[in-house]
Image (cartoon, rainbow, N blue to C red; front, side):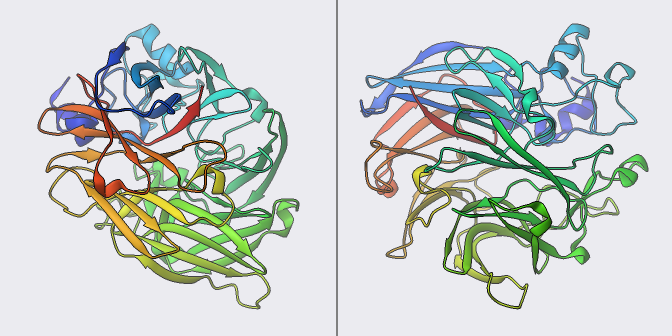
Length: 460
């Protein structure tokens, strides 16, 4: 690893890759509920070779980490997602692709550069590794063996599809669609409960933007287009492919799920950025979305290449009045704790929720990530938190229902936590509505799970 690579913050500490693929039992402290029978899958960037600089965290090769739970025991397994990019670089024994197209190896030209590193979920009997620039990538749920891209999607797909808990449909979108990369083209799509892709429509956004996530209600879909802009021309000049341009403002396109993209109505609000919503729902002629809103886009520079400002996120509620004449979005702050990775009980997605969980940060100097796990009860307004030890950092918390018929929020919360002082990771399991009490069980890994993005529970 050369000097430049060692200085890259995305290749040090718990961002640094773990390149072995392992399979072992994990000792459990406390009592893991025997009703937990399934697997928590997490995914994140994990470059198999020292990357070509400049390197950004978002562009490392995907690795899936599986925590398989049954009869109070935990078994861990991790595997690389064997994308065409990973296999080509493995064949040649070095990194070939680069986020700066001028620095890529000629062997990378005309080859797929997908990394499948952002989300992993179960739908239609398939475990899918997702990354918004390419097709979903199928893996075996039990062995994590790679099976290849799902070409039936006919193009790239978001890493954040929404699964309707009533119909079983998977609703999704894509951005940067069209013959030229980094374009304003977008797609709206639907996959039936059995995994069959039944719809894909294309439309144009107000401008080219990184559209990381979106919102879905029982009858509507909402596409946020916010000023983390995309520009191939800028990238070819040596500038950032994605950059913050607040003067462009923010838009959210709203359409009916049973409608056509030609009917999209564009609402607007002040410049800001949302990586992840908590959930969205509808009541009469109004739509509501609870989202983690940043004042500026984090982790990205300004359009002139200068460093971006410090970003602060808060949970806010967007209100869209479909019957009103105004296209303005009403914005209300509903929680003042800085946070990210908001989640709800998956059985309430697309419908109004009572309970929500997220990773939070109460101390800016305590860890290079999130040091707190928070639970919000929207019926009572009560917030409770579990604060980690100094130097520790949590992943996105994932809710698991106690049973299929349990009331909303009745179950467990799982989170993978990096123990900074020991440079290793634990899996924590909480009673979901009593996180302040601390975990009821801790699965203690002998090694690190590098910082990643998202995960989901899959019953076995």
